[in-house]
Length: 178
Image 1 (cartoon, rainbow, N blue to C red):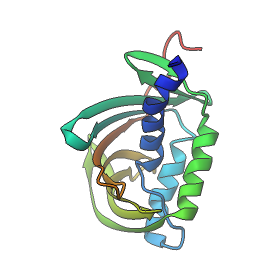
Image 2: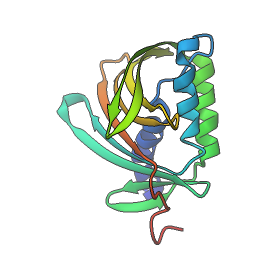
Image 3: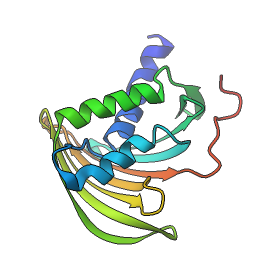
């Protein structure tokens, strides 16, 4: 098995985490617009995401991704690698999700996340039988997602939970990665 084919499951999971972390947003639902705006902003600003997944059978997996300098870097097996996918590729995928999913959203309340005022939104999305329910906290001052808690049901008995935290301070590409 080649190195690239061994990386595909992990890279795929990270890419899904980035695109699914804020459920695809149906533009017809005005309550979803702040989530759509936040979901697309992460591809335009330096972002470091930390994802913890709980998989079927209670297994867990942690992942990190950095969006900086028009590139995506992924921490895989303790080593940073540069993804062949670009932030523009991810934005295009997110826009396809937006177009294809049936999503409903609602603002729940405003609350503080790590000392920053955030709007908490709940969303339910259905995209070709994959259902997700998410809570996403969006910074009131910056319009960027701060964290997401999401449950995903693929419809074939596989369910998982994802917790994602986003950091925007002092984000740089990992040292030594080309």
